[in-house]
Image 1 (cartoon, rainbow, N blue to C red):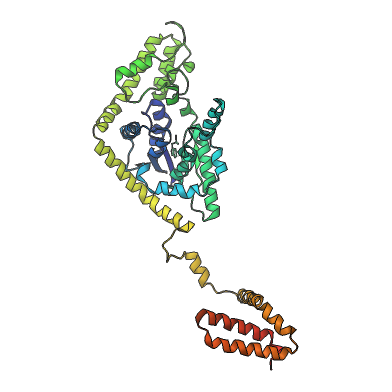
Image 2 (spheres, rainbow, N blue to C red):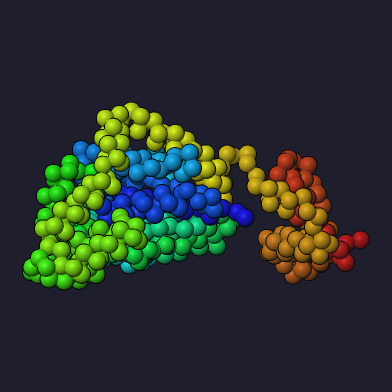
Length: 425
Ligand code: TRP
């Protein structure tokens, strides 16, 4: 059974939070442990430049995200873990795909359309105000990320489904135009992990500013947990676990029996203050060991860097040969290179009909050029004499010619002789 390739990237603009971990990192690490998958995980730092022009932040986020994957137990012998910008094949492929992508497809991209809509809503005349070519081209860079490793499955959040569909479009167009080189990927959206609630109960997301960082100091974690929205039920009143952000967060990290026990305490009327304390202690216990590892890695960045560089070597070993095929496919080749199919075609014996057809075509071409000359001869008073004179003159002229011009004149003479044969003695 051939392995399926799973690939996903995280944009390096923020500090990893519990939503990132549960929604992307944890399931990805779990998949990479399975023998039926070949996993590619990467820091999407070129994507970061699209929305963030603060270099310190991009750099710091790259450190934090890399250290997080490792601290959470990613085995980089099993998975290929790399930084997008260490793979020069990706931007090169991006350009080639850019030339295979219709602008109309990019016009429909949600990320771009959201900016245009915001400009329209705020009454701006220039609808593309603040839109960089990076934002506009974002889906093509993402397509290159995915197609570069011929991923079968791409785990993403719902907001990214459209990008995977666009990737399929772009790959299909390439495959139809040139050769079937690219696998059409499928998006994989895990509905459960889309529902990690943030402090205010809405989906945990940096854009709502409601996140719990994965590795902050315990007192800060407790402070944030105390901010989680609850209802106004008093201690002793039964509480609805399923509608409680506190319970849902607990549940994300709990075993079945731990979750069941906590659910029972909600029924029994645990006070919100106690529930917050329980959640803090529980999360802190789960996170303290990886946090220690995270802090160790953040204090040993040369090591993390070396892990990424090793990953880049591994990734490039896959990317470079595929890109080479792509280049050859589109015609970017060493000058003497002739593709194997063409060699075969040249060598293939042409059929008798093919040769006859080619010969007819060649003759027709020559005749067209000689039309005027022939008409002169045929319209003259003494056709046989004129024909003879023409052939003699052309035969004589041959002596003065060389190389291509001679060959051309010989061909013409042959056709003229055939056409005028019945007048020649
Ligand atoms: N655009 C994705 C996001 O913002 C990150 C990303 C970049 C990605 N390239 C990718 C995800 C390739 C999956 C596959 O979430």
